Image: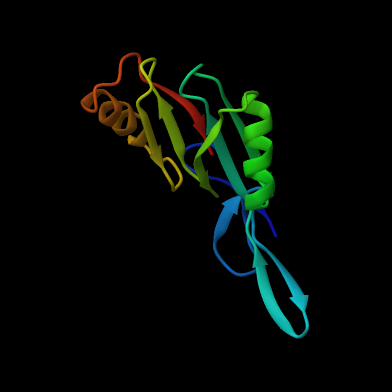
Amino acid sequence: VGVIWSANTIPLEECGSGGYQPVGQCPTYNNYGGGSTIKYIFNAVAYDKNTGAYGSGRNLSRGDAKKEAKKNCGTENCKIIFSAPYGGVVISSNGIIVTQNHGLMMGDREKLLEKCEKKGGINCKVVFKF
């Protein structure tokens, strides 16, 4: 298994199942009772619309990523607004949220910001990209 660099300078590694993923993010295969299951790595973002607080949980199981995101958000009103292996989250100062649940490619950041602004977002910014 070798490490390569993609066009956007994220180091990639070849996964055992074929294809390339960011280093350390290849799915792991576990054998339980003769069957194979895939353990995916998830990222999550929680957001409190009342305070504007947000937090993330990264590179964990889906449930653990959500728990970590809520904990890092820091308030009782934090709600999960994003949960996926890859993607991006844009939040505006007036509470508009735009998410994308796949890896950000060249130009996607600008498209997310534009989408936020079209929805009436003020001071839109990318707060997380996975």
